[in-house]
Amino acid sequence: MRIALVALLALCALPGAADGPKVNRGMIEGMEHSLDHKLSALWPQDPLEVVGLSQGTYIQGYGAVFLSEVNVAPTSAGASPFNPTVTADQVRRTHEKKLQRMAALRTAMRAMLLDSARSLDSVPSDEQVAVGLSLFYWKWENRDGLPAQIVMHAPRKTLLQSASAEQASIASEEF
Image 1 (tube, rainbow, N blue to C red):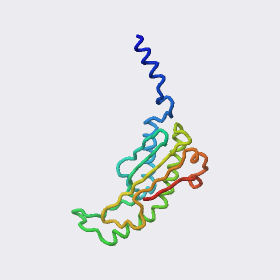
Image 2 (image 1 turned 135 degrees about the vertical axis):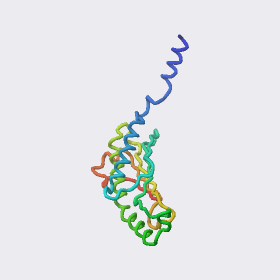
Image 3 (image 1 turned 90 degrees about the horizontal axis):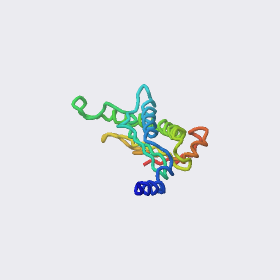
Image 4 (image 1 turned 60 degrees about the horizontal axis):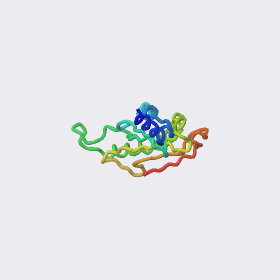
């Protein structure tokens, strides 16, 4: 009995999850589903393709990070038994479509970042909320002027103080 009491007291004295934020997996999963839905709804008549599912995690001391891979302009072009070669016109049209969609994608990412900050109330205000998108390309695609990845992040406090995504001070990097 004494051993159990000593062990219990020792466990209570250890720094642990009780001292940190209460961000649980359910909160992160909710944001993953929300991001997938928002990405899929960007262009309802000709939607982008979410490749796999969005993934999120909480890193204590840093914040919440969400990642996804998307094909901004899915196409039926590509080498297949039904379409053995990709024409120069298909390459050009796919490239133009992706270039045209980049501004709207960046705007949507800013809004997703703001929505995530508002929804994740257990994330401390001085920690970051980050959204990263990797862009999918076929080997035959022209990638001139298009990023491979876009990452946006800001402290949750900064996002919460912003009236809109356009006014928020968000760090954005493209690779």
